[in-house]
Image 1 (cartoon, rainbow, N blue to C red):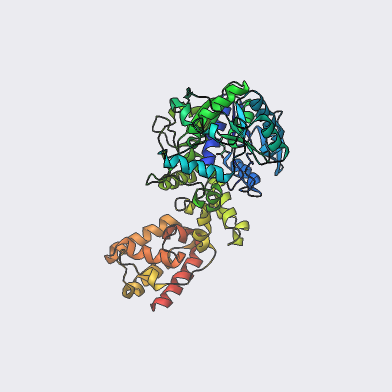
Image 2 (tube, protein in one colour; image 1 turned 90 degrees about the horizontal axis):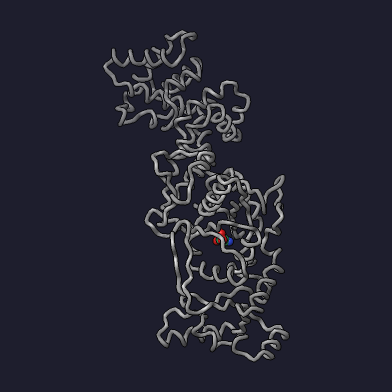
Length: 498
Ligand code: GLU
């Protein structure tokens, strides 16, 4: 199967685009076919420089590499394949040729109406009780186009360079139907479809003509695209037929919704893939999340790698209704994928994320041990340096942090608790300094003094790490070693006036 992803380079890749690309890529991989990327740059005003490169990088980050079309080769935007060019602005002659064929066969016509004339038509139609006027069969014979003007006048207007649009002459009295792979049988009556503009006088096609010319020319079997294109499909069916091209299969993927079920906007920054990359999302987690936006495997399995998705994914299990974008689910998946990373891989990425803030991590032979202590406590790698800081920097003792009413630690009791800690820890011989021994001795001390474990462990953790959220006191003490632990305990005693 040949599938494609056809982004317009108007900004960053967003999560909806990633989903479309992912589904199309999975289907190509499943069937041993090809997945291609085509750049739809016909709206020059909205084009953002660098967007193509950025999108391809975001796809590559997610593990989605095109087999054909617009690709990154050694970091440079290039094109590969025999059905190119794959960038629409380089295909204008092909659209012109298709439009000429449609004109010659009476499936399209020139329209010279100015903006004012179009507005006047709408106003008049509305006044006559037509709430949503369209340029269609009911008005086309009243407008200024090559169907109504004498042939010589049309020729003269064209020769004089009068701006025009080439419009599709939508057939009348027809039901246009197709069997959508996701939505099942869909039909529209031709009377509800307008005479779509196909090509403008600047030579640029609209999406509609370009879609038909390109998906035919690029031998696409399955057009997988957003639901917003559903109501345009009848126009595309007419165009395929008029041009004598076989009609591809269509699969319209559901809209993405916010948790309040409002439509998720493309322009919202927080749905751009780059935002998630910057935040430290794992590609595995984002891909897993995106796969579930509208699809489910029909089992209770929730964690899927890209390879598992290739086996499990099917369009039959994609829902018609909107897919709710649930950020909590994304965080949960991120946490799951963090735990699934092999220890060494986790440590490697934690190190990369920390190097710029804590240069010592680079040469630390004990880094793995420390990284494993933060493993259960971070969801995103950018949180790593904050968690690791206590192993490399001595925090200032902070009474407000050591005292904690939930742990029943009153500031006034701190001198006593810290004194107890100092005396029991000091008794542990260097060669017995490990987390089990430290914990056993702290436990024995709280029992004989009628305290709760948290009354000693909370201040110990607070003075060792300087943070309210950190790895546990005993583990940190064990990694820091006896000398450093005692230094920090004694510094805290001083501050607490013990
Ligand atoms: N350029 C179109 C878009 O970004 C592509 C739609 C399609 O996949 O055909 O919505």
